[in-house]
Length: 66
Image (cartoon, rainbow, N blue to C red; front, side, top):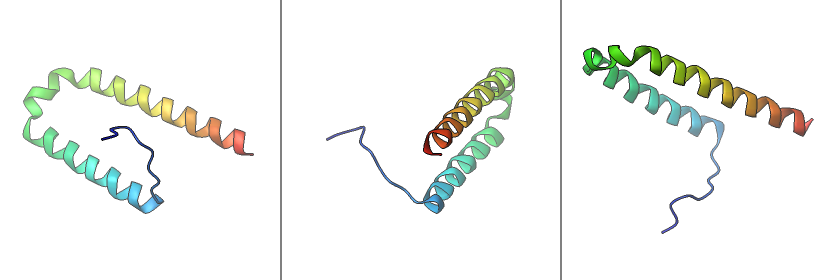
């Protein structure tokens, strides 16, 4: 069994995947809000850093394709 393999998805399949992850995140946050409130700053920092990284990589690949 090969755990890490390449997949190709369409844009709408990725949209469905992101919607699923968002739904799971909202459900966890709503159910365990007292637990996560102490980690809120750390979670926001992680979200900002990872979003900036993905944006940088996307823009870099766009520049290479142009």
